[in-house]
Image (tube, rainbow over all chains, first blue to last red; front, side, top):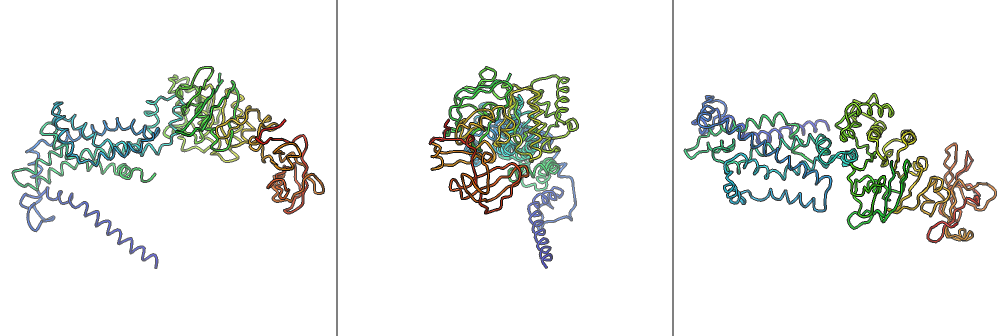
Length: 276
Length: 334
Protein backbone atom coordinates (compact mmCIF):
# COMPACT_ATOMS: atom_id res chain seq x y z
CA UNK A 1 0.00 0.00 0.00
CA UNK A 2 3.07 2.20 0.00
CA UNK A 3 2.22 3.41 -3.46
CA UNK A 4 -1.27 4.59 -2.46
CA UNK A 5 0.12 6.64 0.39
CA UNK A 6 2.65 8.22 -1.92
CA UNK A 7 -0.08 9.21 -4.37
CA UNK A 8 -2.18 10.60 -1.59
CA UNK A 9 0.75 12.66 -0.34
CA UNK A 10 1.46 13.84 -3.83
CA UNK A 11 -2.09 15.08 -4.28
CA UNK A 12 -1.98 16.85 -0.94
CA UNK A 13 1.30 18.60 -1.63
CA UNK A 14 0.22 19.57 -5.14
CA UNK A 15 -2.98 21.10 -3.83
CA UNK A 16 -1.07 22.93 -1.13
CA UNK A 17 1.45 24.27 -3.63
CA UNK A 18 -1.32 25.47 -5.91
CA UNK A 19 -3.08 27.14 -2.98
CA UNK A 20 0.09 29.02 -2.05
CA UNK A 21 0.78 29.91 -5.67
CA UNK A 22 -2.70 31.33 -6.11
CA UNK A 23 -2.42 33.23 -2.84
CA UNK A 24 0.77 34.87 -4.05
CA UNK A 25 -0.70 35.59 -7.47
CA UNK A 26 -4.05 36.84 -6.17
CA UNK A 27 -3.15 40.56 -5.84
CA UNK A 28 -1.97 40.63 -9.44
CA UNK A 29 -5.09 38.80 -10.61
CA UNK A 30 -7.32 41.17 -8.64
CA UNK A 31 -5.50 44.21 -10.04
CA UNK A 32 -5.90 42.76 -13.52
CA UNK A 33 -9.66 42.24 -13.04
CA UNK A 34 -10.17 45.63 -11.39
CA UNK A 35 -8.47 47.38 -14.27
CA UNK A 36 -11.39 46.32 -16.49
CA UNK A 37 -14.14 47.44 -14.09
CA UNK A 38 -15.90 50.75 -13.81
CA UNK A 39 -14.89 52.81 -10.77
CA UNK A 40 -18.25 51.93 -9.18
CA UNK A 41 -17.79 48.21 -9.73
CA UNK A 42 -14.25 48.44 -8.40
CA UNK A 43 -15.38 49.48 -4.96
CA UNK A 44 -18.65 47.52 -4.83
CA UNK A 45 -19.32 45.52 -1.69
CA UNK A 46 -19.55 42.51 -1.91
CA UNK A 47 -16.86 42.51 -4.59
CA UNK A 48 -17.71 41.33 -8.08
CA UNK A 49 -15.48 38.66 -9.61
CA UNK A 50 -15.94 37.99 -13.28
CA UNK A 51 -19.50 39.05 -14.01
CA UNK A 52 -19.26 42.77 -14.52
CA UNK A 53 -19.28 45.00 -17.58
CA UNK A 54 -15.78 44.65 -18.95
CA UNK A 55 -14.48 47.99 -20.11
CA UNK A 56 -11.30 49.42 -21.52
CA UNK A 57 -12.18 52.94 -20.43
CA UNK A 58 -9.61 52.94 -17.61
CA UNK A 59 -6.76 52.23 -20.01
CA UNK A 60 -7.97 54.99 -22.31
CA UNK A 61 -8.33 57.41 -19.39
CA UNK A 62 -4.86 56.61 -18.08
CA UNK A 63 -3.33 57.23 -21.48
CA UNK A 64 -5.21 60.49 -21.81
CA UNK A 65 -4.25 61.81 -18.41
CA UNK A 66 -0.57 61.04 -18.48
CA UNK A 67 2.35 60.28 -20.74
CA UNK A 68 2.74 56.52 -20.60
CA UNK A 69 5.31 56.19 -23.41
CA UNK A 70 7.59 58.70 -21.74
CA UNK A 71 7.39 56.95 -18.37
CA UNK A 72 7.98 53.60 -20.08
CA UNK A 73 11.02 54.99 -21.88
CA UNK A 74 12.37 56.40 -18.62
CA UNK A 75 11.89 53.07 -16.88
CA UNK A 76 13.71 51.21 -19.64
CA UNK A 77 16.61 53.65 -19.76
CA UNK A 78 17.00 53.80 -15.99
CA UNK A 79 16.66 50.03 -15.38
CA UNK A 80 18.89 48.95 -18.25
CA UNK A 81 21.35 51.82 -17.81
CA UNK A 82 21.87 51.31 -14.09
CA UNK A 83 22.26 47.55 -14.57
CA UNK A 84 24.82 47.80 -17.36
CA UNK A 85 26.80 50.48 -15.51
CA UNK A 86 26.73 48.21 -12.45
CA UNK A 87 27.95 45.22 -14.48
CA UNK A 88 30.80 47.29 -15.88
CA UNK A 89 31.98 48.11 -12.37
CA UNK A 90 31.11 44.76 -10.80
CA UNK A 91 32.90 42.45 -13.27
CA UNK A 92 36.42 43.64 -12.35
CA UNK A 93 35.43 43.81 -8.67
CA UNK A 94 34.08 40.26 -8.65
CA UNK A 95 37.09 39.07 -10.67
CA UNK A 96 39.44 40.41 -8.01
CA UNK A 97 37.44 38.94 -5.14
CA UNK A 98 36.98 35.53 -6.76
CA UNK A 99 40.45 34.95 -8.19
CA UNK A 100 42.88 36.99 -6.11
CA UNK A 101 41.17 37.10 -2.72
CA UNK A 102 42.95 38.92 0.05
CA UNK A 103 42.68 38.44 3.76
CA UNK A 104 39.82 40.96 3.95
CA UNK A 105 37.83 39.86 0.89
CA UNK A 106 35.12 38.10 2.89
CA UNK A 107 34.80 41.13 5.19
CA UNK A 108 34.47 43.48 2.23
CA UNK A 109 31.76 41.31 0.72
CA UNK A 110 29.81 41.29 3.97
CA UNK A 111 30.32 45.00 4.47
CA UNK A 112 28.99 45.65 0.98
CA UNK A 113 25.93 43.59 1.71
CA UNK A 114 25.44 45.37 5.03
CA UNK A 115 24.87 48.65 3.17
CA UNK A 116 21.67 47.04 1.89
CA UNK A 117 20.46 46.86 5.50
CA UNK A 118 20.69 50.62 5.96
CA UNK A 119 17.25 52.24 5.74
CA UNK A 120 17.25 54.11 2.45
CA UNK A 121 15.58 57.11 4.01
CA UNK A 122 18.69 57.58 6.13
CA UNK A 123 20.62 58.93 3.19
CA UNK A 124 17.71 60.73 1.54
CA UNK A 125 18.57 64.19 2.78
CA UNK A 126 22.28 64.20 1.90
CA UNK A 127 21.49 62.64 -1.46
CA UNK A 128 18.86 65.24 -2.35
CA UNK A 129 21.19 68.07 -1.30
CA UNK A 130 24.01 66.58 -3.33
CA UNK A 131 21.79 66.14 -6.38
CA UNK A 132 20.52 69.70 -6.12
CA UNK A 133 24.04 71.05 -5.69
CA UNK A 134 25.13 69.15 -8.80
CA UNK A 135 21.98 70.30 -10.61
CA UNK A 136 20.92 66.79 -11.54
CA UNK A 137 17.59 66.51 -9.71
CA UNK A 138 14.88 64.87 -11.83
CA UNK A 139 17.40 63.59 -14.40
CA UNK A 140 17.82 60.08 -15.75
CA UNK A 141 21.54 60.11 -15.09
CA UNK A 142 20.94 60.71 -11.38
CA UNK A 143 18.60 57.73 -11.17
CA UNK A 144 20.94 55.55 -13.18
CA UNK A 145 23.78 56.30 -10.78
CA UNK A 146 21.67 56.02 -7.60
CA UNK A 147 20.02 52.71 -8.60
CA UNK A 148 23.38 51.38 -9.77
CA UNK A 149 24.87 52.14 -6.35
CA UNK A 150 21.91 50.57 -4.57
CA UNK A 151 22.07 47.34 -6.57
CA UNK A 152 25.85 47.15 -6.86
CA UNK A 153 26.32 44.92 -3.78
CA UNK A 154 23.87 42.39 -5.21
CA UNK A 155 25.48 42.51 -8.66
CA UNK A 156 28.96 42.00 -7.19
CA UNK A 157 27.76 39.16 -4.96
CA UNK A 158 26.00 37.37 -7.78
CA UNK A 159 28.94 37.69 -10.17
CA UNK A 160 31.32 36.67 -7.40
CA UNK A 161 29.45 33.41 -6.82
CA UNK A 162 29.37 32.66 -10.56
CA UNK A 163 33.05 33.47 -11.02
CA UNK A 164 33.93 31.24 -8.10
CA UNK A 165 32.61 28.27 -10.08
CA UNK A 166 35.11 28.90 -12.88
CA UNK A 167 38.34 26.95 -12.33
CA UNK A 168 41.23 29.34 -11.75
CA UNK A 169 43.56 27.15 -13.80
CA UNK A 170 41.75 28.15 -16.99
CA UNK A 171 42.47 31.80 -16.29
CA UNK A 172 46.06 30.90 -15.47
CA UNK A 173 46.28 29.06 -18.78
CA UNK A 174 45.12 32.26 -20.51
CA UNK A 175 47.84 34.19 -18.72
CA UNK A 176 50.45 31.64 -19.80
CA UNK A 177 49.10 31.90 -23.35
CA UNK A 178 49.98 35.56 -23.40
CA UNK A 179 46.66 37.14 -22.43
CA UNK A 180 46.84 40.35 -20.43
CA UNK A 181 44.23 41.13 -17.78
CA UNK A 182 41.91 42.79 -20.30
CA UNK A 183 42.06 39.90 -22.80
CA UNK A 184 41.67 37.39 -19.98
CA UNK A 185 38.43 39.03 -18.83
CA UNK A 186 37.04 39.65 -22.34
CA UNK A 187 37.96 36.42 -24.14
CA UNK A 188 38.01 33.82 -21.38
CA UNK A 189 36.21 34.84 -18.19
CA UNK A 190 33.20 36.65 -19.67
CA UNK A 191 32.22 33.97 -22.23
CA UNK A 192 32.50 31.30 -19.55
CA UNK A 193 30.46 33.33 -17.08
CA UNK A 194 27.91 34.44 -19.67
CA UNK A 195 24.94 32.47 -18.26
CA UNK A 196 25.69 33.93 -14.84
CA UNK A 197 26.13 37.44 -16.16
CA UNK A 198 22.87 37.13 -18.10
CA UNK A 199 20.84 36.11 -15.04
CA UNK A 200 22.51 38.86 -13.01
CA UNK A 201 21.49 41.40 -15.65
CA UNK A 202 17.90 40.11 -15.76
CA UNK A 203 17.43 40.08 -12.02
CA UNK A 204 18.88 43.56 -11.61
CA UNK A 205 16.79 45.02 -14.41
CA UNK A 206 13.75 43.74 -12.50
CA UNK A 207 15.04 45.16 -9.21
CA UNK A 208 15.73 48.53 -10.81
CA UNK A 209 12.39 48.49 -12.66
CA UNK A 210 10.48 47.94 -9.41
CA UNK A 211 12.52 50.32 -7.26
CA UNK A 212 9.96 52.83 -6.00
CA UNK A 213 11.55 54.80 -3.16
CA UNK A 214 14.25 56.71 -5.00
CA UNK A 215 12.50 56.83 -8.35
CA UNK A 216 9.49 58.56 -6.84
CA UNK A 217 11.41 60.89 -4.54
CA UNK A 218 14.11 62.03 -6.94
CA UNK A 219 11.91 62.69 -9.96
CA UNK A 220 9.07 65.05 -10.81
CA UNK A 221 8.42 65.29 -14.53
CA UNK A 222 11.39 64.72 -16.79
CA UNK A 223 12.85 61.48 -15.46
CA UNK A 224 9.74 60.00 -13.87
CA UNK A 225 9.57 56.26 -14.64
CA UNK A 226 6.59 53.91 -14.39
CA UNK A 227 6.75 53.68 -10.60
CA UNK A 228 6.11 57.43 -10.39
CA UNK A 229 3.47 56.99 -13.08
CA UNK A 230 1.53 54.54 -10.91
CA UNK A 231 1.98 56.66 -7.83
CA UNK A 232 0.43 59.61 -9.61
CA UNK A 233 -2.86 57.68 -9.72
CA UNK A 234 -3.13 57.19 -5.99
CA UNK A 235 -3.98 60.82 -6.25
CA UNK A 236 -5.19 63.44 -3.83
CA UNK A 237 -8.45 63.88 -5.85
CA UNK A 238 -9.76 60.68 -4.33
CA UNK A 239 -9.50 56.97 -4.86
CA UNK A 240 -9.63 55.71 -8.41
CA UNK A 241 -9.03 52.01 -7.92
CA UNK A 242 -9.87 51.02 -11.46
CA UNK A 243 -7.58 53.60 -13.04
CA UNK A 244 -4.85 52.85 -10.53
CA UNK A 245 -5.15 49.18 -11.44
CA UNK A 246 -5.00 49.94 -15.14
CA UNK A 247 -1.88 52.06 -14.60
CA UNK A 248 -0.33 49.26 -12.52
CA UNK A 249 -1.03 46.70 -15.18
CA UNK A 250 0.57 48.90 -17.79
CA UNK A 251 3.60 49.40 -15.58
CA UNK A 252 4.22 45.75 -14.73
CA UNK A 253 3.29 44.26 -18.10
CA UNK A 254 6.65 44.85 -19.82
CA UNK A 255 8.70 43.38 -16.98
CA UNK A 256 6.24 40.52 -16.53
CA UNK A 257 6.58 39.59 -20.19
CA UNK A 258 10.38 39.84 -20.03
CA UNK A 259 10.39 37.68 -16.90
CA UNK A 260 8.15 35.10 -18.54
CA UNK A 261 10.49 34.63 -21.47
CA UNK A 262 13.61 34.46 -19.32
CA UNK A 263 12.28 32.19 -16.56
CA UNK A 264 15.12 29.71 -16.87
CA UNK A 265 17.83 32.31 -16.44
CA UNK A 266 15.93 33.95 -13.60
CA UNK A 267 15.53 30.77 -11.59
CA UNK A 268 19.27 30.27 -11.88
CA UNK A 269 19.76 33.86 -10.79
CA UNK A 270 17.48 33.57 -7.78
CA UNK A 271 19.10 30.40 -6.51
CA UNK A 272 22.59 31.64 -7.25
CA UNK A 273 25.34 29.71 -5.56
CA UNK A 274 22.87 27.25 -4.06
CA UNK A 275 23.50 24.49 -6.54
CA UNK A 276 26.28 23.90 -8.98
CA UNK B 1 67.00 29.19 -25.95
CA UNK B 2 65.50 27.93 -22.75
CA UNK B 3 68.09 28.41 -20.02
CA UNK B 4 66.48 29.04 -16.64
CA UNK B 5 68.26 30.03 -13.43
CA UNK B 6 66.90 30.38 -9.94
CA UNK B 7 69.02 32.34 -7.53
CA UNK B 8 68.20 32.32 -3.79
CA UNK B 9 64.49 32.11 -4.61
CA UNK B 10 62.10 31.91 -1.66
CA UNK B 11 58.33 31.75 -1.39
CA UNK B 12 56.18 32.39 1.66
CA UNK B 13 52.42 32.25 1.98
CA UNK B 14 51.69 34.62 4.85
CA UNK B 15 54.05 33.62 7.65
CA UNK B 16 54.70 30.16 6.27
CA UNK B 17 57.83 29.77 4.20
CA UNK B 18 57.14 26.96 1.73
CA UNK B 19 60.39 27.38 -0.20
CA UNK B 20 63.51 28.31 1.72
CA UNK B 21 66.33 29.96 -0.31
CA UNK B 22 66.86 27.77 -3.35
CA UNK B 23 69.34 27.76 -6.26
CA UNK B 24 68.81 25.80 -9.45
CA UNK B 25 70.15 25.91 -13.00
CA UNK B 26 68.28 24.39 -15.88
CA UNK B 27 70.22 24.13 -19.10
CA UNK B 28 69.04 24.65 -22.63
CA UNK B 29 67.16 21.70 -24.08
CA UNK B 30 67.15 19.70 -20.85
CA UNK B 31 64.26 17.53 -19.69
CA UNK B 32 64.11 18.30 -15.99
CA UNK B 33 61.72 16.54 -13.64
CA UNK B 34 60.74 17.94 -10.24
CA UNK B 35 59.75 15.02 -8.07
CA UNK B 36 58.78 14.67 -4.44
CA UNK B 37 55.92 13.66 -2.16
CA UNK B 38 52.77 15.79 -2.26
CA UNK B 39 53.19 19.10 -0.51
CA UNK B 40 56.94 19.19 -1.15
CA UNK B 41 56.68 22.47 -3.06
CA UNK B 42 57.34 21.11 -6.54
CA UNK B 43 54.23 22.67 -8.06
CA UNK B 44 54.88 25.95 -6.27
CA UNK B 45 58.38 25.98 -7.71
CA UNK B 46 56.98 25.44 -11.21
CA UNK B 47 54.42 28.22 -10.69
CA UNK B 48 57.20 30.56 -9.56
CA UNK B 49 59.06 29.86 -12.79
CA UNK B 50 55.82 30.34 -14.76
CA UNK B 51 55.13 33.64 -13.03
CA UNK B 52 51.76 32.48 -11.69
CA UNK B 53 53.10 33.05 -8.18
CA UNK B 54 55.30 35.97 -7.14
CA UNK B 55 58.66 35.19 -5.60
CA UNK B 56 59.01 36.45 -2.03
CA UNK B 57 62.70 37.10 -2.59
CA UNK B 58 65.48 36.06 -4.95
CA UNK B 59 65.80 36.17 -8.71
CA UNK B 60 64.63 34.08 -11.64
CA UNK B 61 66.27 34.55 -15.00
CA UNK B 62 65.18 33.11 -18.33
CA UNK B 63 67.80 33.13 -21.09
CA UNK B 64 69.95 35.42 -18.96
CA UNK B 65 67.19 38.04 -18.72
CA UNK B 66 65.85 38.87 -15.27
CA UNK B 67 62.25 37.58 -15.29
CA UNK B 68 61.55 37.85 -11.54
CA UNK B 69 58.81 40.46 -11.89
CA UNK B 70 57.66 39.72 -15.45
CA UNK B 71 54.00 38.67 -15.80
CA UNK B 72 53.45 35.10 -17.08
CA UNK B 73 52.43 36.36 -20.52
CA UNK B 74 55.83 38.00 -21.01
CA UNK B 75 58.03 35.08 -19.98
CA UNK B 76 57.73 33.15 -23.21
CA UNK B 77 56.92 29.89 -21.43
CA UNK B 78 54.07 27.49 -22.11
CA UNK B 79 52.34 25.41 -19.48
CA UNK B 80 50.31 22.21 -19.55
CA UNK B 81 48.08 21.81 -16.51
CA UNK B 82 46.93 18.68 -14.70
CA UNK B 83 43.29 19.65 -15.31
CA UNK B 84 44.07 20.43 -19.01
CA UNK B 85 42.63 23.93 -18.45
CA UNK B 86 41.18 24.15 -21.96
CA UNK B 87 38.79 26.97 -22.81
CA UNK B 88 35.44 25.15 -22.72
CA UNK B 89 33.62 27.69 -24.90
CA UNK B 90 36.12 27.45 -27.76
CA UNK B 91 36.59 24.71 -30.37
CA UNK B 92 39.84 22.74 -30.41
CA UNK B 93 40.99 24.92 -33.30
CA UNK B 94 40.32 28.11 -31.34
CA UNK B 95 41.95 26.70 -28.23
CA UNK B 96 45.15 26.00 -30.12
CA UNK B 97 44.93 29.37 -31.90
CA UNK B 98 44.45 31.33 -28.69
CA UNK B 99 48.11 32.02 -27.83
CA UNK B 100 48.77 33.07 -31.43
CA UNK B 101 45.70 35.29 -31.39
CA UNK B 102 47.03 36.96 -28.24
CA UNK B 103 50.40 37.44 -29.93
CA UNK B 104 48.77 38.98 -33.01
CA UNK B 105 49.96 36.30 -35.42
CA UNK B 106 48.36 36.61 -38.89
CA UNK B 107 45.59 34.20 -39.93
CA UNK B 108 47.54 32.30 -42.56
CA UNK B 109 50.42 31.51 -40.19
CA UNK B 110 47.91 30.57 -37.48
CA UNK B 111 46.20 28.11 -39.81
CA UNK B 112 49.46 26.54 -40.92
CA UNK B 113 50.65 26.07 -37.34
CA UNK B 114 47.31 24.69 -36.15
CA UNK B 115 47.29 22.15 -38.98
CA UNK B 116 50.87 21.12 -38.25
CA UNK B 117 50.22 20.75 -34.51
CA UNK B 118 46.97 18.87 -35.11
CA UNK B 119 48.70 16.48 -37.49
CA UNK B 120 51.52 15.85 -35.04
CA UNK B 121 49.09 15.20 -32.19
CA UNK B 122 46.43 13.22 -34.11
CA UNK B 123 43.85 15.93 -33.60
CA UNK B 124 43.04 16.75 -37.24
CA UNK B 125 39.59 15.16 -37.10
CA UNK B 126 38.67 16.89 -33.86
CA UNK B 127 39.55 20.52 -34.68
CA UNK B 128 35.93 21.66 -34.75
CA UNK B 129 34.85 19.89 -31.58
CA UNK B 130 34.56 21.50 -28.18
CA UNK B 131 36.78 20.21 -25.35
CA UNK B 132 33.71 18.69 -23.66
CA UNK B 133 33.35 16.25 -26.56
CA UNK B 134 36.89 14.85 -26.22
CA UNK B 135 38.38 12.08 -24.09
CA UNK B 136 40.95 12.83 -21.39
CA UNK B 137 43.91 11.87 -23.57
CA UNK B 138 42.65 14.00 -26.45
CA UNK B 139 42.13 16.95 -24.14
CA UNK B 140 45.66 16.69 -22.87
CA UNK B 141 46.89 16.56 -26.46
CA UNK B 142 44.99 19.78 -27.21
CA UNK B 143 46.66 21.38 -24.19
CA UNK B 144 50.03 20.26 -25.55
CA UNK B 145 49.11 21.58 -29.02
CA UNK B 146 48.26 24.93 -27.47
CA UNK B 147 51.69 24.95 -25.86
CA UNK B 148 53.59 23.91 -29.00
CA UNK B 149 52.26 26.67 -31.28
CA UNK B 150 53.60 29.26 -28.86
CA UNK B 151 57.14 28.10 -29.66
CA UNK B 152 58.07 28.72 -26.04
CA UNK B 153 61.52 29.01 -24.52
CA UNK B 154 60.49 26.14 -22.25
CA UNK B 155 57.51 23.89 -21.63
CA UNK B 156 56.21 23.54 -18.09
CA UNK B 157 54.20 20.43 -17.27
CA UNK B 158 52.29 20.30 -13.98
CA UNK B 159 51.46 16.63 -13.35
CA UNK B 160 49.97 16.40 -16.84
CA UNK B 161 49.24 12.68 -16.76
CA UNK B 162 47.68 12.33 -13.29
CA UNK B 163 44.12 12.48 -14.61
CA UNK B 164 44.65 9.76 -17.21
CA UNK B 165 44.24 6.02 -16.77
CA UNK B 166 47.33 3.85 -16.50
CA UNK B 167 47.46 2.62 -20.11
CA UNK B 168 46.98 6.09 -21.54
CA UNK B 169 49.59 7.46 -19.16
CA UNK B 170 52.30 5.22 -20.57
CA UNK B 171 51.35 6.22 -24.12
CA UNK B 172 51.31 9.95 -23.37
CA UNK B 173 54.61 9.63 -21.51
CA UNK B 174 56.22 8.33 -24.70
CA UNK B 175 54.57 11.04 -26.79
CA UNK B 176 55.93 13.77 -24.54
CA UNK B 177 59.42 12.24 -24.63
CA UNK B 178 59.30 12.02 -28.43
CA UNK B 179 58.14 15.60 -28.58
CA UNK B 180 61.17 16.59 -26.52
CA UNK B 181 63.53 14.72 -28.82
CA UNK B 182 61.94 16.41 -31.84
CA UNK B 183 61.71 19.98 -30.53
CA UNK B 184 64.83 19.93 -28.34
CA UNK B 185 63.16 22.59 -26.20
CA UNK B 186 63.70 22.80 -22.46
CA UNK B 187 60.99 20.97 -20.56
CA UNK B 188 60.26 21.11 -16.86
CA UNK B 189 57.98 18.37 -15.66
CA UNK B 190 56.42 18.07 -12.22
CA UNK B 191 55.29 14.69 -10.92
CA UNK B 192 54.96 12.75 -7.69
CA UNK B 193 55.50 9.52 -9.60
CA UNK B 194 59.12 8.48 -9.39
CA UNK B 195 58.67 6.04 -12.28
CA UNK B 196 57.75 8.96 -14.54
CA UNK B 197 60.75 10.85 -13.20
CA UNK B 198 63.18 7.99 -13.80
CA UNK B 199 61.94 7.19 -17.30
CA UNK B 200 61.61 10.71 -18.67
CA UNK B 201 64.26 12.91 -17.10
CA UNK B 202 67.68 14.03 -18.21
CA UNK B 203 67.94 15.55 -14.79
CA UNK B 204 65.84 14.88 -11.70
CA UNK B 205 65.36 17.42 -8.93
CA UNK B 206 64.22 15.67 -5.75
CA UNK B 207 62.34 17.99 -3.41
CA UNK B 208 61.18 17.65 0.16
CA UNK B 209 59.55 20.45 2.19
CA UNK B 210 60.67 23.01 -0.38
CA UNK B 211 64.32 21.94 -0.12
CA UNK B 212 66.25 20.37 -2.99
CA UNK B 213 67.53 17.06 -1.63
CA UNK B 214 69.51 16.12 -4.73
CA UNK B 215 69.90 17.03 -8.38
CA UNK B 216 71.24 14.48 -10.83
CA UNK B 217 70.61 12.08 -13.67
CA UNK B 218 68.20 9.21 -12.93
CA UNK B 219 71.05 6.71 -12.62
CA UNK B 220 73.14 9.00 -10.40
CA UNK B 221 70.20 9.20 -8.02
CA UNK B 222 69.69 5.46 -8.20
CA UNK B 223 73.31 4.48 -7.66
CA UNK B 224 74.50 7.22 -5.30
CA UNK B 225 71.61 8.80 -3.43
CA UNK B 226 72.98 11.65 -1.36
CA UNK B 227 70.84 10.90 1.66
CA UNK B 228 68.28 8.53 3.15
CA UNK B 229 65.32 10.48 1.77
CA UNK B 230 66.46 10.24 -1.85
CA UNK B 231 67.47 6.61 -1.30
CA UNK B 232 63.98 5.78 -0.09
CA UNK B 233 62.15 7.88 -2.66
CA UNK B 234 63.89 6.85 -5.88
CA UNK B 235 63.52 3.23 -6.94
CA UNK B 236 60.55 0.89 -6.87
CA UNK B 237 59.97 -1.08 -4.74
CA UNK B 238 61.58 1.12 -2.10
CA UNK B 239 65.09 0.57 -0.75
CA UNK B 240 65.30 -1.41 2.51
CA UNK B 241 66.78 0.82 5.20
CA UNK B 242 68.27 -1.05 8.16
CA UNK B 243 69.39 0.54 11.43
CA UNK B 244 70.97 -0.81 14.61
CA UNK B 245 73.70 -3.43 15.18
CA UNK B 246 73.58 -4.75 11.61
CA UNK B 247 74.32 -1.21 10.34
CA UNK B 248 77.03 -0.74 12.96
CA UNK B 249 78.84 -3.78 11.53
CA UNK B 250 79.35 -1.66 8.41
CA UNK B 251 80.40 1.47 10.36
CA UNK B 252 77.13 3.26 9.58
CA UNK B 253 73.97 4.43 11.36
CA UNK B 254 71.78 3.18 8.54
CA UNK B 255 72.50 0.81 5.71
CA UNK B 256 70.36 0.61 2.62
CA UNK B 257 69.95 -2.25 0.21
CA UNK B 258 67.62 -2.19 -2.78
CA UNK B 259 65.15 -5.10 -3.16
CA UNK B 260 66.86 -6.09 -6.41
CA UNK B 261 70.26 -6.28 -4.69
CA UNK B 262 69.34 -9.15 -2.37
CA UNK B 263 69.83 -12.76 -3.30
CA UNK B 264 67.39 -15.36 -2.03
CA UNK B 265 67.94 -18.88 -0.83
CA UNK B 266 65.79 -21.43 0.94
CA UNK B 267 68.71 -23.00 2.78
CA UNK B 268 71.36 -20.46 3.69
CA UNK B 269 72.19 -16.75 3.70
CA UNK B 270 73.16 -13.76 5.83
CA UNK B 271 69.70 -12.93 7.07
CA UNK B 272 66.81 -15.23 7.93
CA UNK B 273 63.13 -14.28 7.64
CA UNK B 274 59.61 -15.49 6.96
CA UNK B 275 57.68 -14.92 3.73
CA UNK B 276 54.67 -12.61 4.10
CA UNK B 277 53.09 -11.68 0.79
CA UNK B 278 54.59 -12.53 -2.58
CA UNK B 279 53.57 -10.39 -5.55
CA UNK B 280 53.97 -12.24 -8.84
CA UNK B 281 54.33 -9.93 -11.83
CA UNK B 282 55.50 -12.70 -14.16
CA UNK B 283 58.72 -10.98 -15.15
CA UNK B 284 59.54 -10.28 -11.50
CA UNK B 285 58.47 -11.40 -8.07
CA UNK B 286 58.35 -9.08 -5.07
CA UNK B 287 58.53 -10.91 -1.76
CA UNK B 288 57.77 -9.13 1.48
CA UNK B 289 59.77 -10.74 4.27
CA UNK B 290 58.92 -10.50 7.99
CA UNK B 291 60.71 -11.42 11.20
CA UNK B 292 64.23 -10.67 9.98
CA UNK B 293 64.97 -8.85 13.23
CA UNK B 294 66.45 -6.04 11.11
CA UNK B 295 63.41 -3.97 10.14
CA UNK B 296 59.60 -4.25 10.06
CA UNK B 297 59.30 -5.69 6.63
CA UNK B 298 61.96 -6.21 4.02
CA UNK B 299 61.23 -6.30 0.30
CA UNK B 300 63.08 -8.53 -2.16
CA UNK B 301 62.84 -8.39 -5.91
CA UNK B 302 63.68 -11.48 -7.90
CA UNK B 303 63.83 -11.68 -11.66
CA UNK B 304 61.46 -14.33 -12.94
CA UNK B 305 59.16 -16.50 -10.92
CA UNK B 306 59.91 -18.25 -7.64
CA UNK B 307 57.76 -20.36 -5.41
CA UNK B 308 57.34 -18.65 -2.07
CA UNK B 309 54.45 -19.59 0.20
CA UNK B 310 53.19 -17.54 3.07
CA UNK B 311 55.10 -18.50 6.24
CA UNK B 312 58.05 -20.19 4.46
CA UNK B 313 61.47 -19.58 5.89
CA UNK B 314 63.72 -17.66 3.55
CA UNK B 315 67.37 -16.57 3.61
CA UNK B 316 68.56 -13.24 2.17
CA UNK B 317 72.08 -12.13 1.28
CA UNK B 318 72.93 -8.57 0.25
CA UNK B 319 75.26 -8.01 -2.69
CA UNK B 320 78.14 -6.34 -0.86
CA UNK B 321 79.13 -3.67 -3.37
CA UNK B 322 75.51 -2.55 -3.82
CA UNK B 323 75.08 -1.55 -0.18
CA UNK B 324 74.51 2.14 0.68
CA UNK B 325 75.75 3.53 4.00
CA UNK B 326 74.35 6.60 5.78
CA UNK B 327 75.57 8.48 8.87
CA UNK B 328 73.58 9.76 11.86
CA UNK B 329 72.44 12.81 9.86
CA UNK B 330 71.14 10.52 7.14
CA UNK B 331 73.88 11.58 4.71
CA UNK B 332 75.70 9.18 2.44
CA UNK B 333 79.06 7.76 3.58
CA UNK B 334 81.62 7.08 0.86
